[in-house]
Length: 370
Image (cartoon, rainbow, N blue to C red):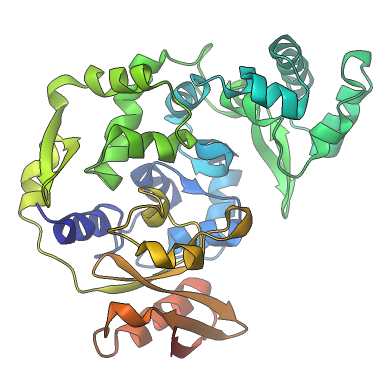
């Protein structure tokens, strides 16, 4: 296999080239989640993969609960498939990051107190969803949590994330960017009494990840899941648990693992010359990460992976990142990386027109080289 084949295969498996179609829930399931820290980016990530994107489709899917939003991979908000969510949370929570001394020193909440906080949150949400302000006030009114107002209202939500990872809360109804909270056991149909064991959950999560982002290594999967926080022995065990469902392949001489059922399809894949414009925080970039030097030239990483975890919208040509872009009013402002070389004639114009279709607004194109 070559990296060019891998990139083309991922573009197809992620519904980008050609567009895979399907509703919001199908796109979310295919990608193993869609990062939703920025709501507009999540909406565009779904739309660019649909033949006929509909305005408000993500909000409608959240309202009818065919997708759910919660803190998941890497501690960021994601749109997730509600049926598969318990398995993803099982692998994330297995790291028990909130029990590490460094976490406790930073945020001042012991494991025992975190467990008590989870019980209180689940109790408060059992009667129905609450806004963040309502949940915070109800908690700090209790003497045991009176000193946690700052942690509970922090924009990073760090103290609340372990409660999401252990299945105690998820986003519920809200207005605009002010999402409320709900208890998964009452908000999501069929929610299990307990999260599955990690070894069992791996049979759901790993095939989903490999089917969209493979071939890969255990280290790359862990970087996507939890920024490398999983115990290495446990991580290896998850891969081993899949047995002969996995195959080892060579990608330009480097060993990688993927689903055995996908090997023939990848081997038959021809390199792509397509150009697509992807929104910020897109799964195509996050799935393998901006540290992948084959996807993104290392010297260009600061253009894409920016301060405070911001991931820029990118120009993708032949599967590789060839530049970055942003909306400047009604203009698609494209900045191409000089070393990447020429793009196919008319490809950027077509990609900008596609963005106009996805957003429902006319867009002109401005291009410069950096």
